[in-house]
Image 1 (tube, helix red, strand yellow):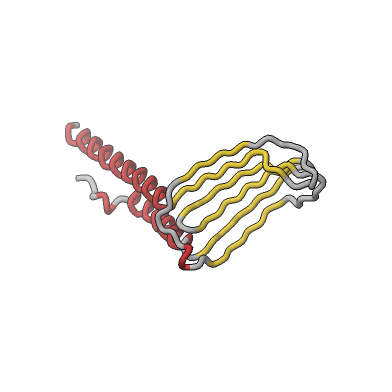
Image 2 (image 1 turned 45 degrees about the vertical axis):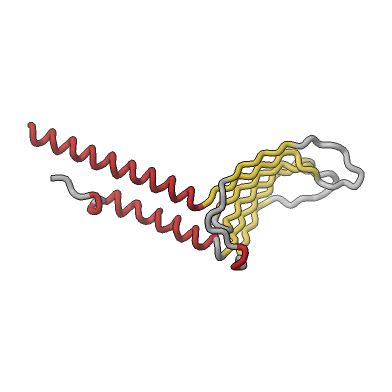
Length: 154
């Protein structure tokens, strides 16, 4: 007889990522965490920013033209508190891609060539994880039932 789903190692191994995602959702409404990576040359800089704040994971990717400026490349990490009035538990998913043409500017300000933003709310990540985990548990139970029928008939 197959074991019940709650006695499966897959069930207990799946609880840890679920608890982590729930904690990350709670943490994003109390703290803002930012990771930034800058790389490039003297005229074109590629900037990648990942922000974990206000109930969502936001990924920003920018290519910036820099004229007569020195940009230091490398990574940066920051963490700060989020005010209670800024908390947002269920934001909407969002994708934005913008492309701009470059032009010579008289004041030598950097000009963004391409910019893309992706917002993945934590509730959406948790629902996707629960769907995947449920499918794995269902597949496992079907597989065990099929194998037990083969053993009985043999």
